[in-house]
Structure formats: C-alpha cells, structure tokens
Length: 141
Image 1 (cartoon, helix red, strand yellow):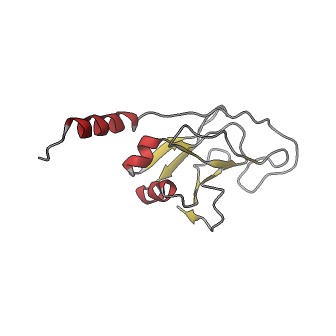
Image 2 (cartoon, one colour):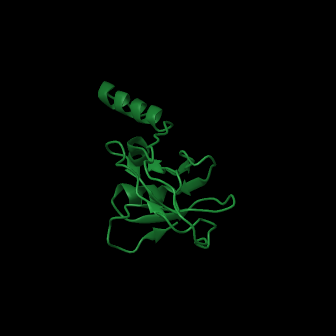
C-alpha cells in the first residue's frame, strides 16, 4: 500500500469527492424560429448552436448543436482525474440526453484539443464540441 502525506491525502480525497459533483451552467439564450431540422431532428432557424457562459474555473463547457437549453460541463475534478465521464446534458431543456466520453476524450479536452461527441437520441440528438475555439479538426468519439 502506498503512503500518503496529509496534503496528498486531502487533495486526493477532495478530488474523489468532487468527481461525483455535477456543475450546471445556465443557458441565457433564447429559442428560435422556423425552418426544417438539421438531420438529427433539431429545429433549424434562430440560433442552432449556443455557446454557454464560461465554465467554473478549471472546468470545460461544451458547445451544443441545435441547443435549446442543454448544458455540457466537465468539472475540473473530472478533468484532473482523467477517467471516462458520463453526463446528462438536460440543463433547462426539459428532457435528457447522455454524452459518454471515454478517458482518452477527457484527456484530450483537458489538454486543449477539440473533441466532438454525439449525444444519445430521444427524438433528436445533439453534437457536443469541447474546445470549439481550437482551429484544428476535432477528434470524434
């Protein structure tokens, strides 16, 4: 068994505790207009992609296609841990979608690489992009 100093123990215990905490960032955007759909059942028109407010320090929020109130945030503790993450991106949308990121995707997000992952489907799905501002082709998981 490895021996931990008090500081290491406190840090690792805090990260383990926070790994289960879900942080929700409220979407302040509106809905929008008519048109068809984007092929995933998401309405077109208005603002089909909403970038959320900045995530809490050290966390990363995703940009969500066809957004109508969903939020996708990987907490700082989850990024630090580097394991796989399963998140419900319901936000204020009134319905759920799951986004499951493997450990390598979480590491890529933490390291500043652009990552894309499709949510699960209800009557539609959403493409979630982390580090959308990075001018490189995304890695899709």
